[in-house]
Length: 434
Image (cartoon, rainbow, N blue to C red; front, side, top):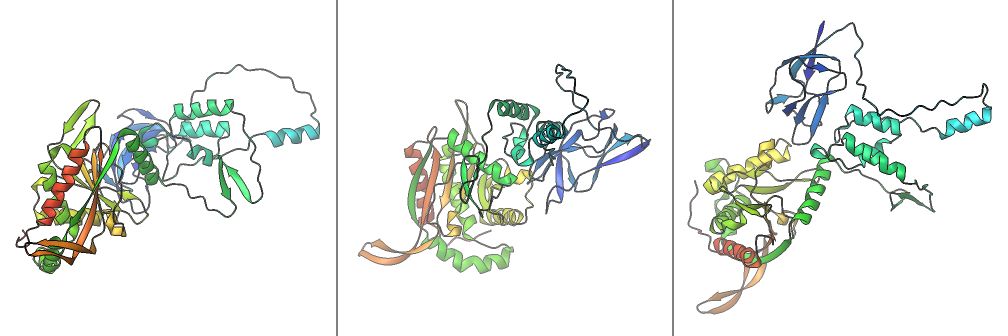
């Protein structure tokens, strides 16, 4: 008997560890080659890991919810080294066998025709973006479903994984639809009803992009989105930050950007209007105990991720700056843990970082509101004084508030950003930090 080491496989570029989320076998259970044996999750992928040999699971070295490094041994399978690993054989629905007597000799021309109409043997592979179980691959290969066609089927399993029922339903619907031949027209090729010109580049969405797309569509279908806008004079805040950023860095070791200052103002506003810090479950409103601020962050690949500042109501400026800087650094280096992106109760997105003066962000479900911070711009403004009005240069920012009209009406949505405006415009320039 030999012992086979189960290891965490490579799960993508820059991924150095993964969380073991489930064991699919117990100690003493038989394992068949290519059968899933455990599941792992990273910030990039959630997937089932198959065993490469047949045998018996005799040891688990990593337990559920523990983190393991890529290549680390997580378990042991005892196998008979003298045997060739047995591949998994799936049970097929029995079909009536019809015996057809063939003539002893088939004309050559008929043989060629038969060869030409036989479906081309396809090969299905699992990629970093999508995992296919051995059973799904077997069905796809048997039915002549190409890799590109399989990648386009919407999965209903965990993290949109393609299940046995998904592919069988697709096969059934596929067989009932008469395939229309693809006839190239002058300079164009028909691809799934869309027109793609020759020379155009077709770029498949990566896994994160697909998840974001699905999440955004789900949010629009779930929430009745309404927006309110307000212009805020941030001159006092800008001047205080410019005056204190160098000293702040010297004394605390943390960079002072506008983000932590604005996050503190948002936190105070939520404390004053806690009914924006809720979620909806059926006909119930769940009012959250803590304020967990999501901080939408753009990644280098163009995707967006939302790390979460936990218990924001307990933080002062230094604490907020540390939280913001830590999460931003982890996001830029693709090192956010699953816990870093979970549990948000309200989200803030800085559309101004790309020069946009405002935007209409989509609510991050299951939250009920999201705030978009526009670019800070120097603007000519009317300044009112006891001695009369005059025109001056002020730093202005437009804030957009998207909220779920099922539970937040226009009054609350508007009052929320009006209170935010009051807090920021009355910024205490004599304050210290710590």
